[in-house]
Image (cartoon, rainbow, N blue to C red; front, top):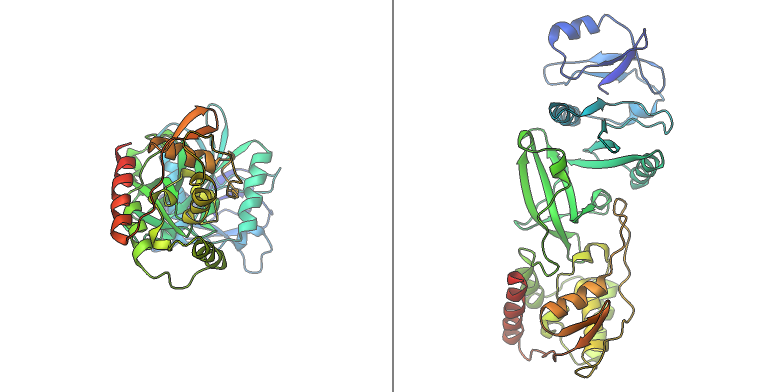
Length: 377
């Protein structure tokens, strides 16, 4: 930790301290603000100066296992906020919830706890901290360390169930990564789920000195029919490749298609649309969209109102309070593509027939036409 209390009860911070100040500090006695146990100063050529508990301490903060990467990152974030004129405290102790955020920021309208998370911790601990912050009127802003970024593709990232706890929704789904070694913030915005751990996104790497705190929450608002980069090639691969190992859900879905006399590779493009809230749906888009198409949309006659069948189950995200309506988003995409007409809020009329591809070439050609229409949207 980077702050402790001296024998006079003053909060002392090691962040930004020069060598003479550090040597002087080492002559004093310090105590943990949380447990009141004595702590010592650790510093070295490769070690960021910090306070540490003595061995065998029972204080929860002594179990955090923070390294120099984490220390360096939160200090730079703190300095970045101070340079913008914000009232920011480094590692303040909040006794009412017995928590110590990395940074506590006071804006004009609210208090913000910034948690810079570089290591995996139990998800139940993340949920507990988040809930407690909200309980005392503090907004928790989690920023992941750049060491947690898994980018296997040029157009997408991989997010496990742990990283999904740090997704926010400000105009769009987004997640933040900060790398102190490059001093860059990555705002991965317009997150688009694929039904798997692969998440399509728009990458925005910004040097910290060129970024304001307010810009973390602003966005270029993409239209509802926005086409994520790489989605078309992703669906092409889905059509052409053998699925390999498949889940129980996908196996049942394939049996469902078999009974309907349709091969998975010959589904219409309308079964593969990039619905914005797919990120909160465990079921793959082609599963729930093809079921709606085959069970509801295709049997309906031209000119009839489309019934709202059971929508796919929406999973909650820890830091997203709004509840999306994926079926409404899907019907709106059909409207954008000219297959439905919106006659009233949440009411759509079918105005165009969906053609089933007979060959892979026809399916890919249909993808090309409709996905390009979404791009132009």
